[in-house]
Image 1 (cartoon, rainbow, N blue to C red):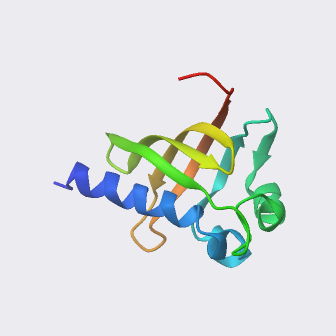
Image 2 (cartoon, helix red, strand yellow):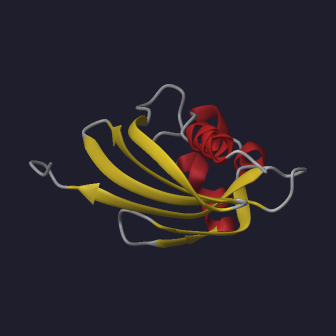
Length: 128
């Protein structure tokens, strides 16, 4: 039986890689971490698809090695089923704080864990 903790740790590792400016700036590296059926509902409310995200990610905040970087906190996860992990966490990017929820899935060991769904919600100033 696969270890649930190991699955969660692998999903967390993938999530942290997606916050790395070098990965965000590389379509090839980001594509290895996003599921082909990826969907995101961003903090702005915009719906992103796999192709749209890969096309625009290098221009997003947090994608420049010389700019502000994502600072994650309170990252935790749970295995929902074999090959399916749900993560929750917060990030700060400069002055902006955001809460996140993502689902990672493992289709096969050859391609590894990939982000299937992501939801971001901006936290207004003064909200705990």
